[in-house]
Length: 295
Image 1 (tube, helix red, strand yellow):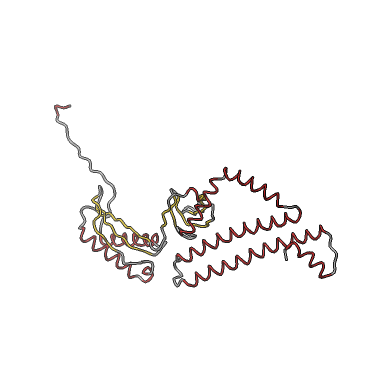
Image 2 (cartoon, one colour):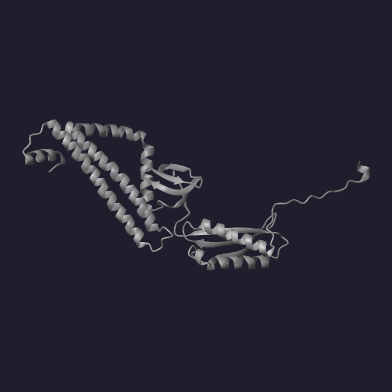
């Protein structure tokens, strides 16, 4: 039984005679309700799928790749289903009043003509499809796309929306994405470069930095943010103003920023306590006295 036959069946069941206009009005309401109900059922199903992935992850402090992918798929499925149900409901309602066969044929011809002028839209959709299938990034990831960087708030087959550190929302068409840098996939890295004055004993400074790294690694509050123990690599550069010492560590996705800030804070406090100078740019000026006869 088709949806359009429901009003007649209802009237026949209750023994009521309904005019054709009333039947079409009731059918329109029924079609809209069925489309809305179908969309709500899909939202519940996708929400349960997302919760299932969240329950699988034992780490509540970090969003897993599976959770991010579930969030992305949930948004895309809801968007695609909403569009599909809306189109299906609209065409079904039109079919109540006019024969949509010739109309669809005309729409096909018009759509072919429009497609030549909508190549960028088609490119956006195809690029978005491959981004999703290849799982390049997902909702919640911190990514850099060209000169824009931020947290992925939403993804559709046409656009990606990023929220940067200043709170600005960037809307990027998928067709414009040529390269993506994912800063939160699987693990991240913290690189800390610290400059000290040339007069400081480098071996002593390295020892102090290793102690700070060990303290941060052993701190229960910060330990679970690391993937492996921090490593002080050694002298990385003899710069103009001082000696640059490099250290790094692998962290959980998205934790590299807070770990770097805490690490630098502890280094600064320890250097102050040890009397180790962190240099600043300076310039030495040599003055030569001219001979008396030159004046």
